[in-house]
Image (cartoon, rainbow, N blue to C red; front, side, top):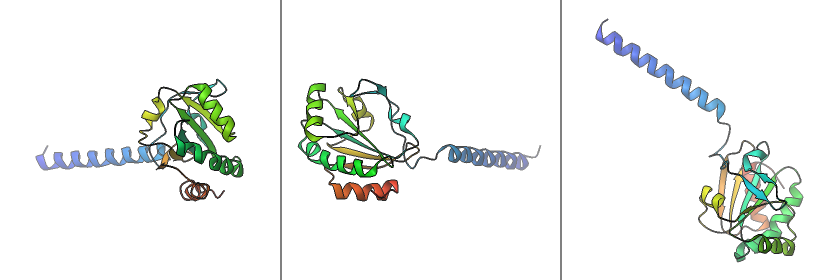
Length: 170
């Protein structure tokens, strides 16, 4: 075989394989960002679940703790937006590095009713690469993290962020 013809065939095969691989990746990657960590956690009700189990619905995932004053301040705002959102957006609050009695006491004080999970050792906190508290992640219906917000979020800001990143007006 002529050396030039062999290089052309190799180039054609490489291009074809690259296109096939890109097509396969695009077909299986509907998420708008990196996927939520597939790590189990215990709910306040004692069930074990994981965030990928909620795929199919957009989510607001909020890391909070009883020792975090901004976390405590934003929880009533999150609850109001959660109630207005109904089943358009799932809210998941992940308590990190608290003992269950401390976390439950704060939930009772703030009246939060959305889904709550425990992260007592901070494993999910680290998996999400949280850098400050509170931290909130906006997750599309395909399980992709489309936005992360560090620090306190007011009710108005939360509504705007949900509209902007999850395409839902609440």
